[in-house]
Image (tube, rainbow, N blue to C red; front, side, top):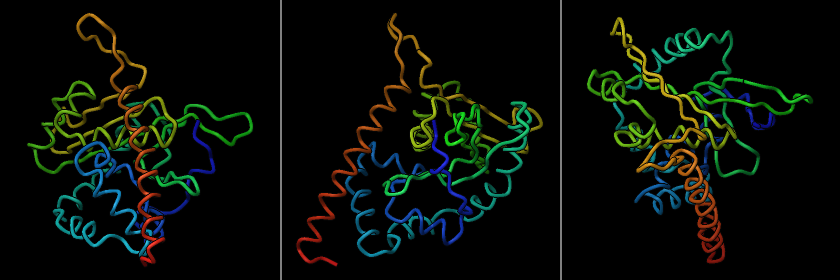
Length: 242
């Protein structure tokens, strides 16, 4: 269950939103903890906390992103979200809320939350997360559209896969939804995949739970990242590093 206190009212993409993410491991970049970028990512976050500034290399990498592609995504995400809500028969979606607990080193901003149930005291929600991608090129969109399982997404676009899993983890959700959308196609303009942590797959005659197992691995790496973050920060403080 997701605690109501973890749902921020900060508006996405504002200066306050950017400041709230300073020094946090966020879902859009969490794939770095699952690969060769682990140590670099931890150092970047320590540097942000020590300086109170966003990492210069992080800003440089963001400035290299095609601004037309970003504008395209921002333009069509709401359209995709509305179509997804209609497809699912949902009259209301909680859209783009920063999820982070005070004192936590982690945070995420899912494109939407589906509220399935509210606790009797109205302090917790059972939710499912929604992440929407609107790639502008036909190549990138169709590459996602042909995916039939979350594991297919992991194979071709691992950063999207780990982003969905981290959102599920941060929101204590058993289910996440991944949506790829392109408005140019009259049919087939939306691909919807369900990431169910309790969904088994058959492998060599045995049932396995790949998402559950990957969530377990992700949580282990996140715990390790916090420990390594503290070690490095304390080492720098002890040496008088500012």
